[in-house]
Image (cartoon, rainbow, N blue to C red):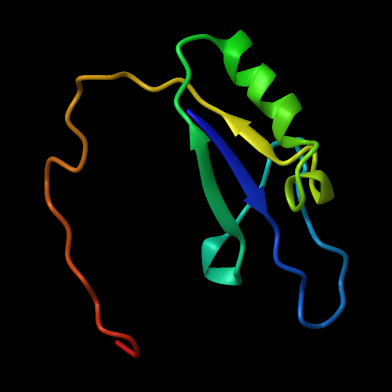
Length: 90
């Protein structure tokens, strides 16, 4: 699975944080970071080729090092316990 994170700027003007202290990509959707899935690829090579193509595109080229590649098992159930929705303000 290949993802891209567009980091939202801090309202107070602090520099945008892209990575944590250990160098791992950092994001928080509650702070406005936008996480997009670019695709699911059968090999790491194909995913890396997609990263190179995406880096040439508007938006992605602004954060060329904010791609996240993760292995994902197909034909495996997810969200097996369901979920709840908490109304805003609670």
